[in-house]
Image 1 (spheres, rainbow, N blue to C red):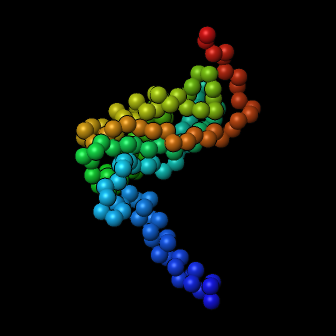
Image 2: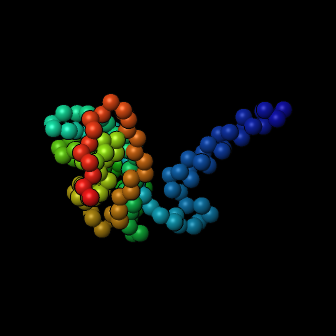
Image 3: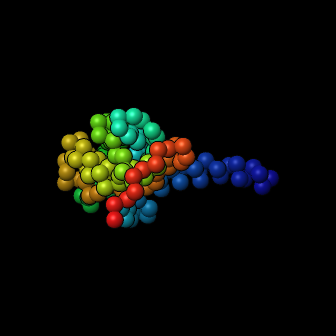
Length: 147
């Protein structure tokens, strides 16, 4: 009997969690922050013109208070495409570590590219949520960090 109740309630729980994840307001309250989460992508790490690694990143574009988050979330494929194209044009390789990307360069590049897709007044910042390298070993040794 209990199993049936749980199974009957499962669709309602999933629908509620999907609405919460989409940024839908709860109880008429405005969301605390607005953003567009990009689907995770693999960005290349290139050394001397040779691909040596990929870093899988999850990125969030934080929106300005006046932005229509639902409308801008529809632009997620364009934002993601712009990030991938920028990373392949000029890889975000960090000179001292081949298992992470150069976060500052990636953020600046994505802000520039996103401003070409939507008006810049809708954009607040870019956050690198996570990054995971494909390889952690058998990579070339980076030069010693400058002191």
